[in-house]
Image (cartoon, rainbow over all chains, first blue to last red):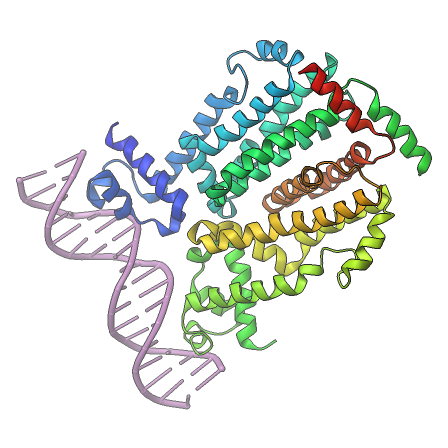
Length: 219
Length: 219
DNA sequence: GTCTATAAGAAGATAGAC
DNA sequence: GTCTATCTTCTTATAGAC
């Protein structure tokens, strides 16, 4: 890897651990194996390093938009798969989503850095929300919509159903980011969550609709 | 309010907005209406201000442990209420939990500060997780356990049921902390979430158990 | 492109008058 | 307890040799 890229890489690691203000240009240079002044031949200043990281992040987020999919390359293929998905496949899907977010080297460091820096810059807060809340929910919602229309899941309230699937994954992710020792337990919880989700939402009888009528009568 | 307390208050506000490293002692002093050197008559140094905030936070967290309850003073009374809770009351409960976390002046600033600073100090990460994940789930789980044993909710998997109730609230909270403009929409989503939660988990027929058997046959 | 030396300035903290 | 003046240290960034 060339020096210019290594600077970004080491800076990202440090920013994700300590936050921008607590990382000194000399720290970054040391990790790269050069002295601080040499670094200014590659980037105008410290802020330019940060900006380059954000730029690269946005590029990767776009590139990897499909990485959460069963088949990242082809949404049509995904749709076919989801129409016939089993509980075990749903669990695999959830775990993959979770583990990708948690362990992907770049993704994990980006997320931690955004978590620390998001309050300094509204654009970063928006980027964080898009990547870890809105986009996953949007994509999962699309898939669940397909599953509902093909009869695998119930059709009402797909939006809330998606929230019910993803919110626990998101919460467990924030737990493991901060306390990595809880990952094993989190994976167990994740699996139990998805099994129960599947039990609640699989559409083998019209449970939900019936219950709603009763609920309305009660009120 | 005396100067010593006002220093903590203004410092907390600034730390929650910018993070410890980006707040200068002179900024805090200016907000209080004194000059920076005067501040050192009240606290030994900048770190001591931060430590005092954390100390106060821990004290308030203990004091307000009951604030999330319908009746903070008496868990037994809570139990009685929960045994006969209606959907509308469940919605009120969820909204109160959400709005308390979101708008309580101290709580909100503490949470934002912890969000920024948690990666600098494992103790802060643990405090964050306890306050916003483990304690709420523990308390809600206890209440849902009561509701299950009294026949209001189904009895299996109370732990996951609690996760399904709280995780969306947690996620919406992190959204609104970062993008306050989304609060109105978040409240709507929250209400739809709880209605669907109630529909899924209320125990007016043995839907879930039946479905589980079918699911096992399928596998 | 990397180095050493160093300038320039920011921020925390102290001294001592009032 | 608050102030002005000042010290000290740390950090970014530049100058200029190699």
